[in-house]
Length: 152
Image 1 (cartoon, one colour):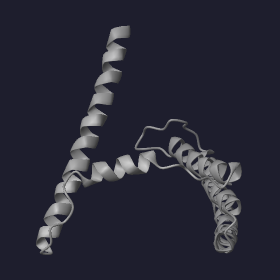
Image 2 (tube, helix red, strand yellow):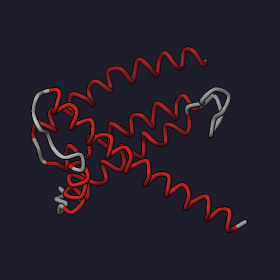
Image 3 (cartoon, one colour):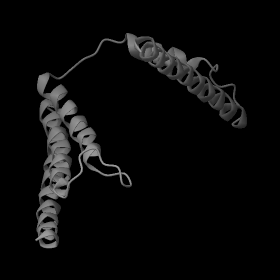
């Protein structure tokens, strides 16, 4: 039983590695073909591997805890929303009250983006997220009124 689980996990990891290598190689070949169509030499097909290695070895500069937590909050809200949306007759958390949970979880994603915008210290990000929050308030309230009218 334990060996079957280990073999399944290792085969899944091997499949991901092979798919990654295959995809990056094909993308490199596509870049080379595109360059030939434009009558230039273009990068070597392994250039994508070099770019990925270079990106992974760079030093990460962060704006602080609020910026990082805002990104995690936005991603977490979006991923959590998927669990409450039924796909066909299959739902992870079935129930009629999932509509309200989905609405609130989608709002958490936008609030996470707001936290990251505040943490970045960029005035343009603050202006943009202020507009996005005003827009969210503008369509969230009427949407909730319509949903309440449908359900009650």
